[in-house]
Amino acid sequence: MQKISAFLSKRSTIQLLLAVLVFLSVTVIEDRFFRGTSLDLTDEKLYSLSDGTRELLASYDEPITLDFYFSKSLATPFPQLLAYGKRVEDLLKAFADENIANVQLSIIDPEAFSEEEDEAVALGLTGIPLNDGSTLYLGLAAADAVDGEAIIPFFSEEREKFLEYDLVKLLATLDNSNRRTLSLVTSLPMQFGSGGVQAMMAGQAQPYVLYEQLFDFFDVQDLDSDFTEIPSETDVLMLVHPPALNDDQLFAIDQFVLKGGRTLVFLDPHSEAMDPRATVPNSSSLGPLLAAWGVEMPEGQVVGDASLAQRVQMGGFGPDAVKDYVFWLAVNNSFLSGTDVVTGTINSLNFASAGAIRPLDGATTALDPLVTSSAASMLYPADRAVGMPDPDALLRDMSATGETYILSTRVQGAAQTAFPDRVAEAIVAAGADAASGPVANGDISVVLTADSDLFDDRFWVQLQDMLGQRVAVPLAGNGSFVLNLADHISGSEALLGLRGRGISKRPFEKVDALRREAEAKYLVEEQRLQDQLSDTEARIAALEGQNPDGSAVLSVEQEAEIERFRAQLLETRKALRDVKRRLRQDIESLGDWLAFINIAFVPILIVLYVLIRLVVRRRRTHRFL
Image (cartoon, rainbow, N blue to C red):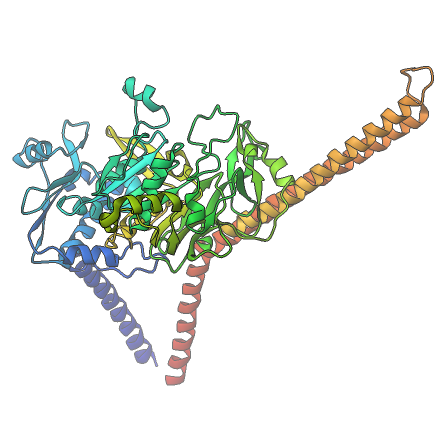
C-alpha cells in the first residue's frame, strides 16, 4: 500500500513538473513566433483586422515600406509604454503578413546619437526626452514606390482603440492620384473653430477635427457663400448648415442632384455651433428642395428625447447639478440602422437640438432611415433650445408621442425639379442643345440629416496636447458617421469596416435606466410640492382678502393652513430623500453585482472546476486501491 501511495505521489510530482515545463515552453514559443496571433473575444472584434483593412492591404501591387521607430531598450523602465509599443509592433506585423510581397516592415530601435535617431528626426518623428538626455521614439514612417510619404510622429496611448484606423488612414493618404473632390457649402466656422475669423487673426484658430479629417481623404473645395454653380469635378456635394441661398444657388443644387450628383445635407432647426449669444433659433433650410425630394423637416421644431438625453453639468456641484438634457441626444446603436454599411459598425452618435425628418404623402422617393430617436420623445418649439433652458422644466413638459423621429436618412428614387417653370423656359431657350441643359426629373441619391452640431468638436471629441500635437480622442462616432457617408456615397467602401471601432465611452444602460426611473419619480414629487405651494399660497391670499380691516395679523384659520402646509412640506422633503436614497442603493447594489461578476465569479468557477476534478480523481484512486 505504501509503495502504491509513494508511486502515486511521485507520479503527481512528475506530472506537475511536466505541466510547468509545457506551460513555459508554450509561453516562450507563443511570444517568439505567434505574438501577432490572437483569439479576439471582444464584442466588436476590436483586435481583429477589418475586412476593409485586408482589402486595402491586398490591393497594393507595388512596394509599401513601413519603418517603425521604437526605442524598446529605453522603454523597458516604463512597462505601460513598452506594452503599447509591442501592441503597435504586433499590429504592424499583422499588416505585413496580409501582403508579404509588397508590404515591407522594418522595426528600428534608434539608440541615442545614432544614425537611426538622425533618420527619425529627419523624418519628423517626435520623441519623449528622458532624464539621461536620451529620447524615446515611438513613431512610424510610410512610403510608397512613387513619391507618397506619410508619418505618425508618435503613437499616443490615448488612441490605442483607434490604432487600426490611424494606420489605415496613414496608408490611404499615400496615394493622392485617385482622391475624390468634395465641394463644401457651410456657414459653420469649420476652418477656424469656435473662435471664428477673430481666432485666426490672433493665431489661435483650431479647425474642426472633422474638417481636417475630410482633407485626409478628399480634395475639399470650400464654396463661397455667393457661389453660382457647382464645380463640374465635384464627386460629393456637402451642405452643412448652409447660409440663406438664393434661387439661382438652389437651382444649381437642384440640377446637380437630379443629374445623379451625390449629396450630403446637414440642416438644423437650431445650430448651437453658431453664436451662443443668439436670442432666436439659428436655423437652416433648402427652401423648396426638400419638398421636391419628397421629404419635410418641420420648421422651428427640435426633438427632445427622455430616453437618449445626455447628462450635462448645469452649474454648481454635486449629483443634483448633473441633469438629463433632452435636446442633447446620445444615440446608441439600438437607434442606428444595423443593416446599412455606414452605420452598421458605429456604436454611438451625439446630436444637439436636432430636427425631425418625415416623408411627404405621395412622394415618389423612398426613405431608408439611418438614425432615429426613441419612442420616449416629442417635438418642442426650437426657441426652447436657445440660451440656457431648464432641463427639469423640459422633462416636466415631456409628453412622449410614442413616435420615433427620423434624424438622418437616405432619400432615393425618382424626383421632380423644384423649379419646373425655370426648367421649361431653359429647355425652350436651349432648343437643339436641350439634352445638355437642365432636366425636369431624375433619380436622386441624397443623405439628409436634421442636425449640423454633430460636426462641432465639443459634442463628440476630446482634444488633448501630446508633445505639441493636438490629439483627438473620440467620445462618439460622429467623425466615423460623416466620413463613412462621404466615402460610401462617393463609391468607396474600403474603410467602412473600421472607422466605427473602439469608441471609448460606453454607457451602463441598466444603471442609466435605474437612475432615470428614480429621477422621474423625483421630478414628479418636486412638481407635486410646487403645486401644493401654489395652492396653499392661493388659499392664504384668499383668507387675507377676507380681512375687512386689512390687518396683517394672521387669523387662526391662516395659521392652521400654514401649519398644514409646513407638515406637507416636511413629508414631501422626506419622500424626496427616500427617492434619492433608493436610487443610490439600487445603483450601488447593481455595481456590487457587476464587480462580483467581473472580479470573483470567473475565479470561483475555476476553483470549483479544480475541486471537482480533485474529488473525481480521489474517488478513482480509492477505487483503484
